[in-house]
Length: 377
Picture: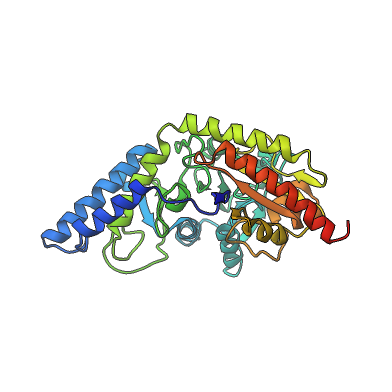
């Protein structure tokens, strides 16, 4: 198997699985229970929270565990808008966001909120002057992804955060799902930051929202006692422990992991550019873990299915997108509908080998020729 769909989900680290198994078997109690088993589960939850906080350089009280990044994004955006609705109903974001952000924006429109989308430069970065011009007295939230999940565009969230510090009534949310464990993350100028375990070799079903202590949220899940007052439900302390373990492991030797992925990305670019009809959508200053390309005249799903028959796995857009639609991110960057409707995503990991890339390139080139021959081209 050659797995090149790491941006959709990663393969869990065995140490993470072991951490979960140990926690769920040795700490079977409900962390909300006052008996001995409950107290042990509670202490494990506290330890996991502290570990995540230390790794991200935030306070334990600023960590809210969720079921994943989609819930974290919804809690951040809806929770902010409901809590601060008396300040205004204006939100600023981009068209490069994950569907869990864009769909939430559409929902908020039905509640009377106004959404503004930022202009991008030729590299896909937001125009700071446009952000300044769009900020209003009734702006309550700016939500921007740290790394775009389809193309890999990196936004300078620290610079954006510095600007927004001048607007104390504006809360800054960043979807960091595709950034954590790949590039350095500094949360100094960020109010809310979303992340997910299954993108960092952890388990599906757990994520987190980092919420600075000076920010309040209206919960979107109401109920009884839990890990935090901002998100009710029985604490899944074993998942929290596995999340903390995954985060610790993915951050180890991060520079060497990055250099390895960068070399693989450069090899891919060099060889794919030689194939007739292939256009590389990801710019060279994008994250090397994601390489988005378009193949003229061939439907993306046809390529994905053809490769899967060879036990090679890539994707069309993001796993959460409607596969029948054009890629909004590619369209926004390239302004080319053909590129947007024929785009595929190759996503790499520090686990990916040079040999896998070489085999992928060989099979990919042959498949493109076969598919074009079948079309009579």
